[in-house]
Every structure is written in C-alpha cells, then in structure tokens.
Length: 404
Image (cartoon, rainbow, N blue to C red):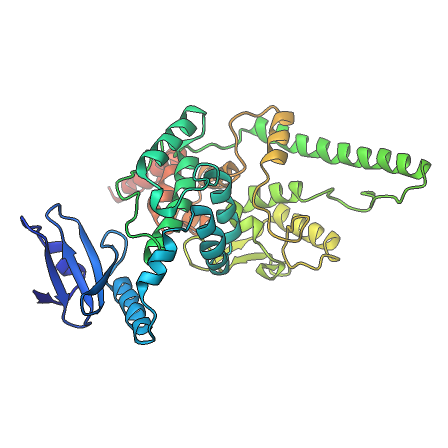
C-alpha cells in the first residue's frame, strides 16, 4: 500500500490481524510498519532486501523519520550502511553513549546542558553501571523511582530527573542507537507539590538575619585564618574588609527574592543580560524560548551594582561564576546550612521564585503580569497563585454594582 506518511494518516490508521506496511509516496525508502498490536514503526529500506527499523511513531515525527531516512540513503550511496552502526551499538554502554555521544551534543545545544548531564551522571550512572543501552528497561526505572519516593524525594524532583534521562534515550533512538524507546508506558508521578511555599514575614526576617550572620562569621573566620598564617609566615588569603559580600550566596538570594529567576537562569546569568543604568534584566534564552524582561527594584538593582563592583576583576562574563569559572550546577549544601541556621523548614531555593510571585499577587498585581515576569508559557502555570488574591476577585465583581 502506498500513501503520504504524515500525522493525519498515522492518527486514523487501524491495526489488522496481520502486520502490514505503507510505502511513502514522496520518499522512496520510507516505510511505515503497522503491527497487529497497534504498534507502528518507521522502517528504512536502503537497498533491495536490506532495511532497518529507525523508530516508533511515538518517538519520531514523520518529518524526523524522513530526515533519518535521507541520512541513511545518503550514507548508503557512499557505501556506509546502517548495519555497521547497529553492530557497533550492540556494545555501547549507557555511560559510553552519554559521555561520547550525547553530552558533547547536548552541552553545545543548551545553556543548562552541563547541569542536565551532571543530573544524569549523579542519578543514573550507578543504576546502569556497565549496562548496554539495549538492556535499559522499564522495570529498573520503576524500582528506582519507587525507592527514591520512599526515601523522601519529592515527586517533582523524581520527574525532573527522569525527564533528563528520557531526553537522552529519545536521542539515542533518533540516532539509531536504540531500536525502541524503553519508557513509552512510563507515566510521571502526579505532582501534588504544585504547592505555593512562600516566606512569612517572620521567616523572611530570620532568613535575612541568617545571611547577615553568615557574612559576619565568614569575615571573622578569614581574619582569624590570616592571623594564624601571618604568625607562621604564610601568604595571606584575600581579606573581606573592602567587600560588601563574602561570596555569591547572599547576592544570589537577594536577586532571586526580587526577580523570581529560575535557578538555571540565575546560574547562567551574564553581565550582558543586565543594564544597570536602565535597571533592567533581560533573559535572551528562557525555558519558554522567549526573551524576558524583568525590571530591577531598588534592592535587586543595588545588589547587582554592588556585586558588579567587587566582581570587575573576574575574567568570566558570568554574574555568578563558580570557582572553576563555569556556571554552578547546584548550591544545595550552602543553602541547606543557611536554612538550618535560620531554623526554617521545608523551603527550597526554588521556593524564592514562589515567594516572588506570591507577594506580587498579594500586592494586587494581575496574574498575566505575574506570568510575564515569571516567564510562564501558559497562564495555567500562574493560576496556582490565584487563591492568594481573593479580594482581587471581589473587587472585580464589585464593579458590576456600578452598572446597576
């Protein structure tokens, strides 16, 4: 059977008692195989009686399948056949695929690429140690995430970790290193934590106080350390006497509190993104792939202005470079210690973003403006804050009274 293979065709196809195939009318060599189970795969026939399965319709779009077939056919004209790659992939371990194939490509594509790759390394290298790509299965990941849930890891964190893994394995399928995506039937945990956790006035006071105490403690420790080094003739470490901030943590906190930046946006923020004169922060490449402008209030502006002065000697253009001059990938330990000293429970660094949004809504800012400031692609994501402004709704319907 011949037909144009597109999304409309795939949507209306029905399985039969026996397997059947549809040959594309636009691209010779592209075949859609339909199994009795309803499962559909793209197949590439690149020579007479020589073909290879290139992926499921659940993973590849018709356009992606066409691109893959064109690539295979182009290689075949040069005498390079997919069996060679397939045979090679039989010995490809998960770790080898990530390090040699996926990581270099992904890091070049995404600003947050290195952080995502580190997430995969941290969570899945031990789990899939020595395993071939083809041996990764649904049962293993189901057990892993159940154990994580039992250990108190939140569903949203588990979902994010698995999303990073899914992206890698999807790419392995597209590159022909996996014949089938193993997590097709894996559903995300329901995230009951669409919680809105923000700081009470008392908590914000305690948190600010904890940061001030931390700054003072670091200054005293550095002073004591230099006295000890001086008494032994050692070189002294840089003093904090002429700096407002002892390190990145307090300016990170103050900026996020007043702008609602995502952690990845904060870690990859550059001075090019900030116009101190106009008091404007511009994020050129956000999660929603749209440029976002955030006006800087007095505290955010003063924080950046001060941090910029003491960071002028930095070679790296990052606002908050790590010790190796690369973006941070986490600040878990430092944040955990600050929370402990502030005696605040169940408050993540990401919750500063919720705090920013919540306080805007409680101040009467409309939800669409909050959506724009947060960079939400869909207003549904912002609606979680709607309950914080009941008087706003009351004021809205009260306007009807004027019409009576």
